[in-house]
Length: 328
Image (tube, helix red, strand yellow):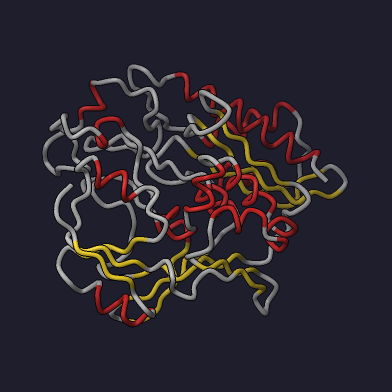
């Protein structure tokens, strides 16, 4: 590891001031950043510990939604009564991630900032990684790309976002609250993560020096009919090949409202509102589910080793929607 200085921020304002120093990075639970530092992928000069900031509360908002602080541990968020009762989709997604030990350390803010698990990004022995070394190329395109993107990729990068939590947040229309040198602002979760385009080194729309304060969830009509399905190589401690966050509002067996988000298939959680619209006013019969699933993956592009993801995603969407439709 390279030499790095460390300072614990006493309050938010001090954290923001310290973040203006060259090479500064915020650190909370450190479950991703420290791994990246050990491997030489990330080389911050200064770590600003924000884990003691008063940002761990989970509380009800006046309009009926819920606010989750950025420093809330994943395990605490997953098991909080407000989350379990009103947003079971989010609870399921959080509990499907990593291991209990890591969930006890990882934070909601850190989860949003997770970086891809692309083999070529993590292994500095490979020079060709536009995300790690812009302009060097993408080794995954011609290499082993079984876990890589089938949607939204570019010629510069075919990596995927690894977060389970973010997929559920996308389906729940969450809003991320941040504060930086120019004050506080909110970012819709759909705009928070980026597609790779020509700048794959950027994962989010955060501005330099901005600190995530928390996540706001609007009131949800989906508590009774929601399901998070994660398809992976083993039952625990594995990232999704494909995941589906399915949320439905049902009345008399007919869909009144729907949200579908995919994980493991793109550089950000993947939503297609036109596919959700196919479900409205209909029952969840095979033809409707097949049409919806096909619309979600329309335009998918497979590489040498991940073509199976296209059909897998469609089957997973149908299965998640059927399960959500039965849940009550």
